[in-house]
Image (cartoon, rainbow, N blue to C red; front, side, top):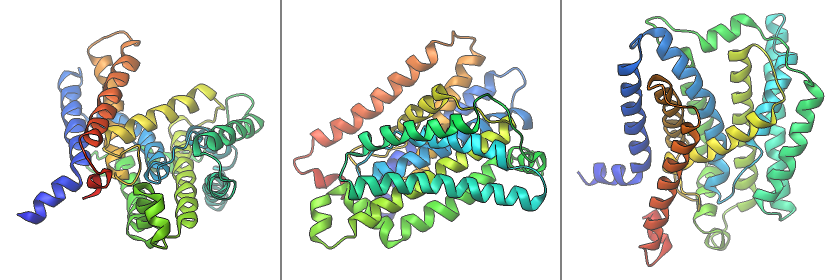
Length: 326
């Protein structure tokens, strides 16, 4: 009983995001003219997973009490690079995928190195590097276009036996391969410690620099996976500053809705995934209820403001901020 109560307390943000996402999706399919079909579920899953990867990328720096404003531009850069490399023979396609993932990881590692060794604020650092990454995307893809391996794209964005969206299995694999090992590793626990209290972490001998660099590196990796996913969905690449900016802001919103504290040290990438699905389903609900498009950013803004306010109220009610981690 005590164990279950602790679990609910520890993961209540993730649980709340999951319940909200399920409720919104049920409301969506109940009012969709086609109902719950394999195609409707697959389309919704693909859109949600796309934002979920960017939200996961944003979660890692946030856990260290940072904020990565370049995730959207790494996402766009990876999309443009993938549209140039991820096609041809199976070997050429595999090498292209590896090149995209390595590029995203390198972008994230550069962010971490500048933050740690340059001693600059993460927001300023990633705002500057994001502009550089966008410039590289423009060099790669000055006009929209490109190609991608259609068989691989169909395998990732299509349907599994029984009509299950393949993208859901894809993100599950990424969670098991990237997030779970990070969360259970020494540097993963160090990242939480840094976000909780950098001074206490330093006094305890926590490898602060390594934890931050790893968090930003994995952030770049996850953003590049999102760029690959976008290429698989659109079969093309586009250096769109508006798209990068939108996904950056929405990733922050998804992180907050998923229960991760912007103060750092508390939260989960899994909660951010459900937060991303909440945001995506809001857009779908506005569509099925035939509301004007301008309502979407308004509703998203209200939800984000409410989520941030609830988190702030919780901290203000505490005499000792460390109580949030107990």
